[in-house]
Length: 81
Image 1 (cartoon, rainbow, N blue to C red):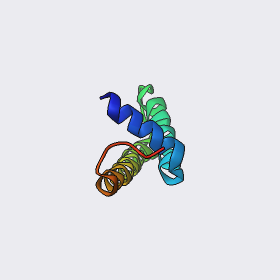
Image 2: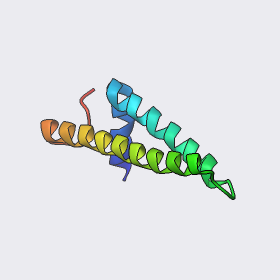
Image 3: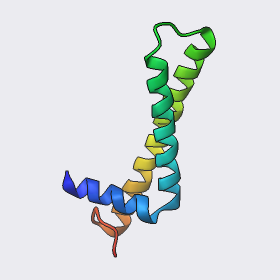
């Protein structure tokens, strides 16, 4: 577990695309939290919620793809210093 946290930290520090994706993922998560606190969602908000969930998943999939590609290239879960 510590290795994956370190690996993610290094990706955030050294990979611009990964960092941008992580920011977008966090923004989507924040908006989804806002929507889930409401007792009732309008039709527009319901569509937004579904769309955000899909976009968040796409971003997460891309982040995992970047990490997997790096692991495959380096043969280890850490970036070189």
